[in-house]
Amino acid sequence: MSSDTTGRPPSSLQVVPGQSSLTPTSIPDDETLPDIPASAKSEADVLERQFARRMEAVDTRWSPRLDSLRAQLENTNEVWDDIQASEQRQPRYSSAWFYWPFMFALAVAEVPINRFSFELFFQESPAVALLVSFLVGGLLVTLAHRMGMLMCRFGYNARRKNWWGEAAQIALVVALVIGLAYGVSVLRQGYLAFITQPEMGFGQALESQQFGGAAIIALKAGLGLDGWIFMLINLAVVAVGVSAAYFCHDQHPDFEKVDRQKRKLEKQAAQMRAKRADEEAVEKRRFANQMRRLGA
Image (tube, rainbow, N blue to C red; front, side):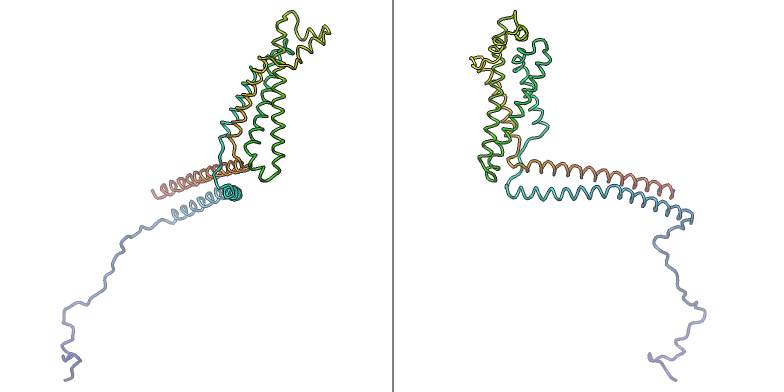
């Protein structure tokens, strides 16, 4: 009798009668998703396409403006980096919301100081005297601003230009300030001297053809004690304006401007990004609500 490799006869390997054969059993998936109706699927596809179009519209609306701002900011940053590398410091200047109201307040402060200087000419029109005194105060403050800027940037400009040109500009502004303050002081002193004669005003002296007396009163060049005190008050106000202009601006002529532009562009870019993010969030919430109602 033959045997297999195990040494047992073939009859010993036969299936026992009555034993059923083994059949494979299927193992179910962990998560069995329910079938979605075809109509719901098509509606979901429509919503997804609408959402994609709305997001594309948001991108089309904001991307060009953001790209333009980004390019401007990059150019401004390059200039800022060049100035900062050459100066080896950060920009130093005050806020424009402080400086310009302060200078305007100085111009207004000149009005009561100089008003009586023009009462000699405008006794019948006080409003005109106030207006002229404000214009003179504004001119003095403007000269103070110019002088302060020249003094603040004298060192930088003197290294790159002719220093005598900068010095000549400062001398010219100083001469204008002193000349204007002196002239206003002469007029005020003439007015104070002339009010001791209440029976005749400056205009009446001109009408009665007393030109010599009127000119002597108005144009008396010599200043007395009160005239010098008045002139020093005007120069003190100008000195305050010069100090404000000197300390409220950067010594580099372009550093302040570039830094202001840099901050402005950064603020605009941040605002645009925030607005774009808000619009995108609105579209995402709308799409989420639509899909939630569709699956309900």
